[in-house]
Image (cartoon, rainbow, N blue to C red; front, side):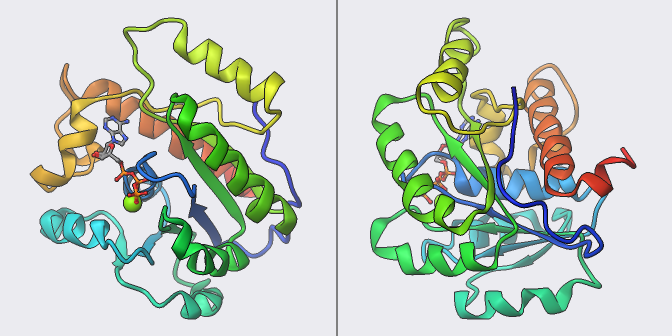
Length: 233
Ligand SMILES: Nc1ncnc2c1ncn2[C@@H]1O[C@H](COP(=O)(O)OP(=O)(O)OP(=O)(O)O)[C@@H](O)[C@H]1O
Ligand SMILES: [Mg+2]
C-alpha cells in the first residue's frame, strides 16, 4: 500500500516543489535529491536546489561537469525559496536537498513552508526511526503536506528486511510510504566520486539494480506529486 497524505492542491499549476527531508542525518537525503533529480529529468524539466551548509551536492555537481542532467542551484538562501514559484514557467519539478541536523531546523522549516510534497528517506536501522517520526509529527504533519517515507539502503541479501520494514511503517507507525525503494549499491555510494548519477552510468550488471531502483522512485514521485502529469506516463 502506498499513500501520500495531504491536500492535492491546484493541479493546473505544473511546477511541484519536492523537499527531501529527515532530521536524522545520513539517511540518504543528498543521494535521493540528486538521483531523483536525475531520474525526473529524463521526462521533466528539473531544478535541484541545495540549502544545506554541508554543500555535498555542490561538490558532486561540480564533479559531474557537463553530465549534470538538470539545472542546479547550490548554496541557496532558504529565504529565497518562497520565490521559487516565480520559476513555474521553467520547471516541472524543483527538488530541494535539506540539512539533517537539529540546529538547522529553521532552514528545514522554510523549505517545508515552500514545498508541495516531501520525500522522507529512511534507512532500516532502529536508531533512525525516532528522529524520522519526530520530523513527520512535528514539522510535516502540522503543515498538512503530502509526504511519504522512502526506504533506502535496503540490503538485498536479507530477504526479510524489506517486508519487515514495510510492515512496521504500515501497521506499527502508520506513516505513508512509497512502494519504490532503494537498495544498497556501491554504484550509489561511488557515483559522486566518479562524477556521475546512477542514471548517467552505463547500464551493466553492476549498475542495473541501482538504475532500476531510482527510475521506479522517479516514476512514483512524479505520479504522486502530480497525478495530472502521471496520466502521461
Ligand atoms: N542506496 C544507497 N546505496 C549505497 N550507499 C548509499 C545509498 N544511499 C545513501 N548512500 C550513502 O550513504 C551515505 C549518506 O548518504 P547521504 O549523504 O545522501 O545522507 P544525508 O541524509 O544527506 O546525510 P546528511 O544528513 O549528513 O546530509 C553516503 O555515503 C551515501 O553515498
Ligand atoms: Mg545531505
